[in-house]
Image (cartoon, rainbow, N blue to C red; front, side):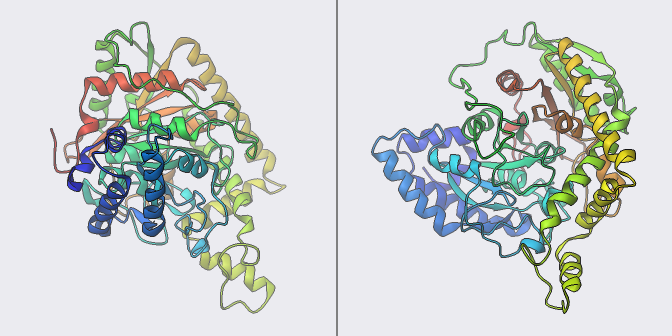
Length: 494
C-alpha cells in the first residue's frame, strides 16, 4: 500500500490493513509523520510531534501483532491528543506560555488505555489556551487554520489534524462544545460522552464538573471504536461512574428499519433563530438531516427548548468560577511559568500570572474570582448552580418524550480570525447550542451534514440521555449510511 493512500482510509480500515499485513505499523506512522511535516505549517494543528517515541512504540506494537496478540480493533493506528492531556515525557502546554516546557511525569488514564490497546500517540494538538473558547485563536503559539479554507478558524487542532489527513483519529476534550464545534467547522465527527464515562485523571482541568474527553474521527464508527477503548472505570477519578467500557457492535450492517419507533425532538425556538440568529445554510442543512431521519423511519416532533435564555449565564458563571479555582495553582512558585523580572514574593505572583496567561484566561479568572467572592457567591454562583439543576431536570422530562434531540451545533460556519477574539460576548454566545449538554452531563455526537455557500462544512448534533451511547452511535451510523458528507475531504465536494 502506498503511503499517499493512507489518508483515504478510515481508522478501522487502516487497522484492518495492518492486521492483513498490507502495511506495517511503522510504515503507517511514518506516512502520517510525513503528512504532518509537509502540511502542518499552514494549519498549525500540532504543537508537538513525538516522532522518535512514536516510531519506537510502532515497532513494539508491530512485534505484538506479529505474535498474534489481540490488542484492540484499533491496534497500530496512530492517534493525536489535545495538548491538555498529560503524556509522560512529552511536552504538555495547554497552548499556554504558563506551561511551556512542562513534561508530565505520568500519563493520563486515557493515554494508558490507548497504549494498552496498541494505539500510537504521534503528537499533541493545538488548542485554545486552557481550552477556553472555540475560536482557535487564544493559544500562545499561533492560531489554528481550517484545512477547508486557511483564512478561517478550525476551532481546535484535533479537528484540523483529522480532516487534513495528519492523523486518522484524535482525542479532544469537551467543556461547552469544544469537541462538537470544531467538528462542525471541519466537517468531521466527534462525540462528547456522558460525564463520568471517561476518566479525567491526567487531563489538566478547565471546568472539572463539565470537562470530558472524547473521540474525534472521520466517521461515527471510528469514534465509537476509540470511545470503547477510553471509557470505563478508574479508581483515581471519583467522578468516573461506569464499571465497564462501552461496547459497540460495528461489524453488523445498519438495518433499514433501525430508526423505526425512534422519537426525535427538534427545538423550534433554536432552529427558527429565535434564540440567536441562525444562518440559512445551517438551517437548511440541519432540516435536511431531519428529513433523512424521517425517511429512515424516525418520528419527528418540534418543541420549545426550555431555559435557553439562562444557558450561557449559568455556563459562564459556573465555568469561570471553577476555572479560577483550578488555575490558582499556577502561581510561579509551585507550578508554571515564573517571571524573570520578579524581585519580591508579590512580584512572583503578579508578574508570573500576568505574563504567563493570555487575555481570555485572565478575563475568566477575574469573573470567576468575582462570583466566588463572599459578597457575590449567593447572588451569582449559587443561583447559577440552581439553574443548572433546572436545566438537568428539563432534559430528564424531554427524554421521557424523545429518544434524541437534534439541533445545530453552531449558528454559523467557521469564522474568520478576529470575528470572535475581540468580542467576548460573541465568543460566549457561540456555545449557546452546546453548553447545556455539558451542564446536564449528557452525551452528544456531532456529524457533518452539508456545506454553506462559501464551501465550508456544516454540522448537526444528536443529544441523548445519560449513558445512551449505544443508541447514539446507532443513530449516527444510520445517518452516515444514508449520506456521504463524512467522506468528503477538502478539495473534493462529491
